[in-house]
Amino acid sequence: MPSMAPLLQALGLGELDAALLAGASVMLSIVLALAVFAGLGMLRNRCAPTSRSYELLHAVRKPLSVLVLVNGLLENLSWLLPAEMRSYLASVETLQTILIIATLLWILLRYIGAVERRLDRLAQADGTIEMPLLRERIDRSSLHLAFKALRAVVGLIALLMLVQAFGVSISGLLAFGGVGGIIVGFAARDLISNTFSGLRIFWSRPFDVGDWIRCRGQDIEGVVESIGWQITQIRTFDKRPLYVPNSMLADSVIENPQRMTNRRIYEFFGVRYADIKAVPAILADVRIMLDEHPAITNDLTRQAHLTRYGAYSVDFFIYCMTATTNWAEFNAVKEDVLLKVAAIIHRHGADFAFPTQTLHLERDGGDPPALPPEDSAPA
Image (cartoon, rainbow, N blue to C red; front, side, top):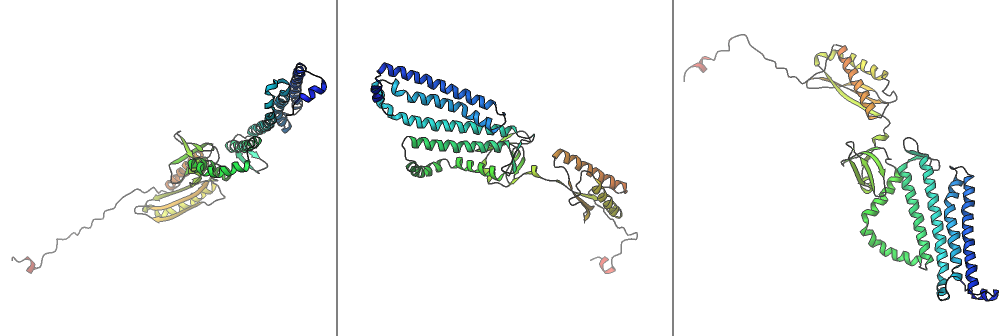
């Protein structure tokens, strides 16, 4: 900042006059900051609370008012500081640059937070949010993860701008970071792996919060409660919390029963061999029952066929799909189907077979054959 001495001499002002002028300038900065704060507040209140204009004005209002006030104070440092301290005024321009960068960062973070809250309020009862730009729905956890990543990017850019404001070369810093990054990469290998795995989960979306998942080959099964940068929290069916590193989930084969379109009923039945003549009629009635059952979908395969002759039973199977995927409702439908199959079997005078063994004994009514004379003679 240039020295104010030539200006003071030209105006014929002394040090006391300069101090009074600086005080008046500071008061003007305060009044101007309050005017900006009040003016933006009135403009904001004219907008609908859910509009983007309201969010933008709300994000700008406080940071811009602070910028006007603090910048006014910095501009008057040359008038307020004693003469022996004015040699330090060269750093005021750097402070003003830092102030502008910090204000922009503050505004962006406030606006990002406002947008995140607005989208969060749009969440449906199932916790998903319609995203027209992405042409899909995302859950709350994925939304918060995306905004965390956005804040991290904005913060990194602001940090690089601050470093440059202090006169540090960005290219030199990046060159040093290349060497340092290798060292840090080895030290924080798991941390980095989990972070990138979290991003992979976010973009590939193998599961969402609230989904029931199962990792094949691992003892991991339950309902997803949250997806974070490093770990995913899963609640098992016995209500134990599991905190699974994202890298483990990203490298696993994940089964997501929550996304099933139907559930399958595939059961075997065995009737007695004595009832084999009734099997065709039993199968015909079972097929009719499956076709007419309101909870069995007609769009997919429905089968009932004789499949094998077992060791003690004549076996047939039924194969069908339920319209519901809810676990409790599926069990109720399956129970009803099994009971109806049993009723059909009994209606035809047949019954279920159970493990039995039949022992056939042969008896000859005559005397045992006599030995030949030569075999019966004493030795």
